Amino acid sequence: MKDIDIGKKILEIRKKQELSIRDLAKLADVTPSLLSQIERGLANPSVNSLKSISSALNVPLFTFFVSEVDKKDLIIRSNNRKKVILPGSDNVLYEILDPEDSSDLEFAIMNLSPNTSSCVGTIVHKGYEIAYILEGEVKLFLDEEEFLLYKGDSVKIPAGTKHRWENNCDSESKVIFAVIL
Image (cartoon, rainbow, N blue to C red; front, side, top):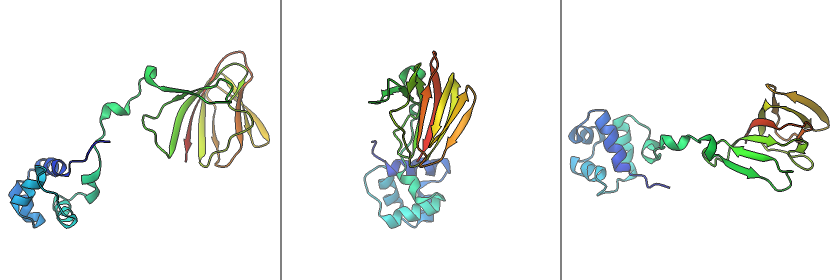
């Protein structure tokens, strides 16, 4: 994780707003010397000083604590996806589409080889799942019911619903899905 440079963030915002150090210091009720030291990383601001500076810049206080996102890290090239085969998944390959390991979203492509099942038994999520059939056809088991889904079909699986995917065809099926926790 990158260190957060609060002084640098204050400097960037101040310059975008075309404020001098003296102007911002006056608005924030701090000395120009202290503000200069904060921007250069030579002094640590108090919480009260940060509140005053954020108010003077008209930005939320948390702005100073949010890490910058490197835009190139938001892109996953198709040849760089994480690929996962879960134990007991009958050689089902999952391609992870989310660039971050977030705890509230799972986004992936499930590649079901011919005559395979996504799992032994059924699975249940705390959150709901939305899926779209990219290729082939699959049988979806929702609790005690079975549904045949074809390329282009989509489904929302409510939280807590037992389910399993099966590909009973002689060609691969692909399902793109997101589980929102």
